[in-house]
Each structure stands twice: as structure tokens, then as C-alpha cells.
Length: 68
Image (cartoon, rainbow, N blue to C red; front, side, top):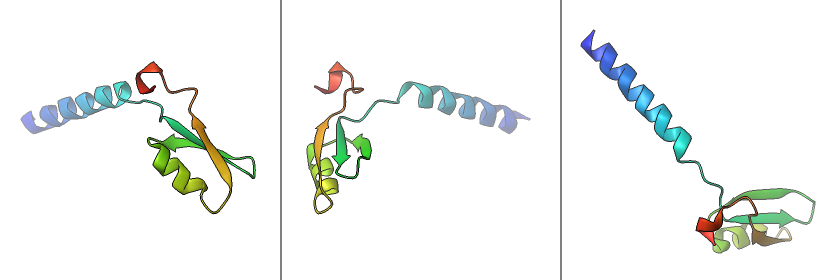
């Protein structure tokens, strides 16, 4: 019973932490086919993604001021 309670507390703590740590990535790749991917944390990652397939990188408007 003690292990079951400890596991429940651990799962609850992980669920609470997961809800508070989500942040929008800083860069978006806008591809020439019209699609967008806003999952890049660095400009270098974004540029590598559009390299060879066409497109450009722009700041993610959903990323808060803490990323500027």
C-alpha cells in the first residue's frame, strides 16, 4: 500500500510539473509550399531545416518576451 501511495504522489507531481513547463519555441520555418513549423529553439536549427527545400526563418510571434 505504501508503494502504491508513493507512485500516485510521484505521478501527480510529474503531471503538475508538465503543465507548467511548456514554452513556445523561438523560431518558425516558413516553407515555400506554404507550411510552417514553429518548433525551433535556435536560428541555426531553423535554417538547417529550410536549407535545400526553400523557405525562410522568422521569429515565433507566440514566443513570449523572455525569448527576445
